[in-house]
Image 1 (tube, rainbow, N blue to C red):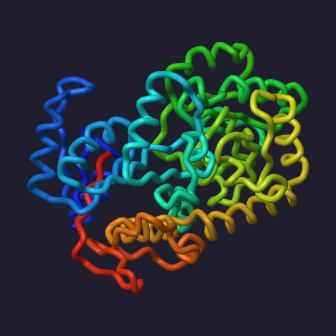
Image 2 (cartoon, one colour):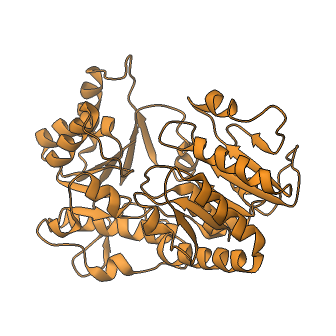
Length: 370
C-alpha cells in the first residue's frame, strides 16, 4: 500500500496520483512551522502504520523524524536534492536531521558528499532523477512564440534566484549577439531576480526574450539549437535532462552533480561558473558545427535512456524499499541493481516490495511525505 502525505495542496503530481488511486492526505497549516501538524501526522501514522517513511524535504523530515522514532519506523530522508555547501543555520539543521535519519538518499554523488556522507556506509544511497524519453518524443509541435529572430534558439529554464546564474547567461547572450544576428536567446521561469536580470538587457536589444513561467517547457526545448544552464552548483539538473532527452547539445556550468550527467566533449560541454567568455565560445562552436552538435545531442539522448530513465529510477527506489524492509542495514544495495537499466515500459507496481530472493511481495506499506 502507498500513502502520500502533502504539506500543501496543488502539487504538480496530484492529478496523476488521483488517476492511479493513490491515497493522498493533506496536512493543514496555519503557519510554516505549525506544531499542530505533528498531531495530524501522528494520527495518520497511528491509522496507516507504515513500514517505511520516505521524506523529500527539510520540512517534511523535521515533522516526520520524531514520529518515526516514537513508532519505530525506518525513515528514508530524501531531502538532498542539490550540492550546496553552507554553514548557515538552515544547513546545520538539515545535516542534523540527516544524521538522525535511518537512511539517506540523494539524487547525485556530489549532493551526498556535500553533506558529509558516502555510499560506502550502507545507509546512504544515490538514485538519479529519471525522465521518460517517450514523453519528450511526443513534444514535436512547436509552440507559438513571437519575437524569434534567426534560425537558432538558445535557451535556459530555471527559477530566477541567486543560485541560478541568469546574470552570466544574459552577459553571454549579449557577447554572442555582438558577433552574430542569427540567434535568439530565451529565458524560461520567474522569481526574485527577474526584474534585476531584465535590467541587464539594453532596451534596443530584441533578441533576448523573457518568457516567464510556462507549462509547455518541453515543447519550447524542442525548438532549441542548444540548451544552456548557467549555475553555481546543482544536484542533477532536470532541465538539462530534458534537453538531452530531446537530443539537444548542452552547455552547463561545471559544478555539483552536473558532471555526473553531462560528459564533457561527448554530450555537451562543461564550462567554469561565472565565465561568459567560455560559455559564449562553446555556444558559438556548436552553432558553427551543426554536425557535431547533432552528434552530441544523440549521445545525450542515449545517455538519458541508459542511465537516467524513469524506469531505472523506479526500479532503484523499489530496491531501496526492499533493502530497508528486509532490515539490511549493514550492506549496500547489490551492484547489479544499481547498474540495471530498464528500457521497457514502466509498469505500475502498487504495494510491492523486494524479497531477499529478488521476487516482489505485496505486504509492505510505504508512507511518503512531500
